[in-house]
Every structure is written in structure tokens, then in C-alpha cells.
Image 1 (spheres, rainbow, N blue to C red):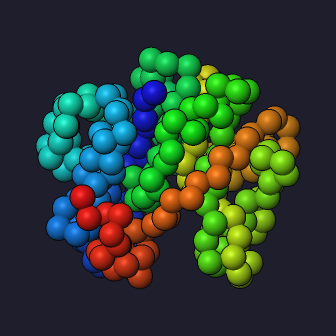
Image 2 (tube, rainbow, N blue to C red):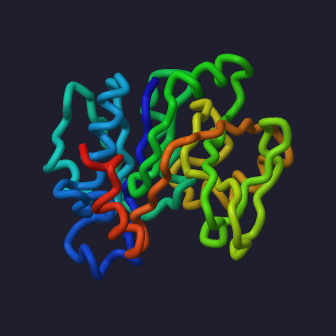
Image 3 (cartoon, rainbow, N blue to C red):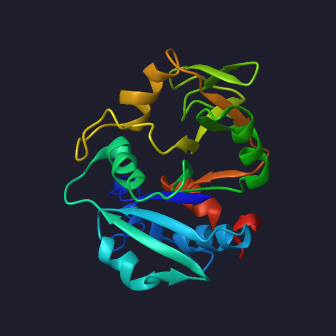
Length: 229
């Protein structure tokens, strides 16, 4: 299986903490956050990583080069912001297989690779990874029925619930109807409507979920045991 990592955002909310770095390179526990992600993927046996870059892309390319811990790194660099959808669409062209794992470069989730691959083999439909969090108000809730995703609730709903972890297992032809270079959000412009028309399964993750995109979680990540690698 291949992996696409979306690592091209501006990281405006984290700019005060890391003014001179792209968000995925923010230092966590003494090393760039993206390095922690790549080390985790290497331990799981991945050999080919597609990095979708934009803002300050050269700092990531110069740091990692074309190979890291035995994994080939393929860079897809945006000339202009494409949004999450446009970035995935552009990166899918670099995939060699019929499905790919998609991750955000500012979140950590210890995905059960064997489990999600087995679920893909059962039905060959897109999979959205879900996590249970104590408070869903920041993220919005994921609605599921018998392992199938049925919708997304608005943000500001407090209390424990399931969220979209921003991790997906997708067929590599999923976004072919969009022209390459089109700027769109994978979540709001595509996914929110698509789950009402097509089958999207849910994969339940028991992993800790951390998003370093806001200062309070960036600080929490510094001492999180799962990130001490």
C-alpha cells in the first residue's frame, strides 16, 4: 500500500509558535512532526510515500530528500493552493496501485494498517477512519449506521462522539471527474455530498488522535508518549 501525506497548508493558527517553518515541520518532542509520522509509517512497512506540498515546500524536500528510512519519497508540489481536494486529486496521479492511504501532515493516528486493508478487500469501497474523542465540538461528528458513513454533523456539538480523523483509504480513481488543478475542499465540496450518493465505509480506530494545528494541542503533543519515537 502507498500513502499520500497532505503537507501543504499554511498553518495560520500555529504561525506564532513556528513562524519560519511549514506546519508539518513544527518541532515535537525534539524533531519535526512530519519525521515522527514518517518513522511511524516506516515501522509499519510502507515503502512509497507521496508528499503533497505547497507552502515552504523546499524546507521539507531539503530535509528528507528522495529516500527516508528505506521509503521512497515522491513530491507533488502545488504552484498555487489547491485545497485538500485539489491536492489529493493531483497526488493520486502518482499512485501505482488501485487504492491509497491518505493522511494529514499535521495529525497523528496510529492506524491499524492490516485491519483497514482487510476491510478494503471485503468491499473495495472508500473508507473513512473514525476516532472517538471526549469533545467533538471542534471537529463535528461523523454519523454512521452499521459501519457505513451516512453524514456529518455541524461543529459545536459538545460531548463525546465519533469524528472524521482526516485519514482515508481511497480508490485512486475517486476524483477523476475533477479537473487537475481545480481548487476544492475534499471534505465540504466532495465528501459531505458524496456519502449521500455512494457507499463510504467507516473504520474504527482505537488509536490516540492528535492534531497539532492549534497551539493547545501542539503543546500537548510535546509530551504525548505515542510521539516519543
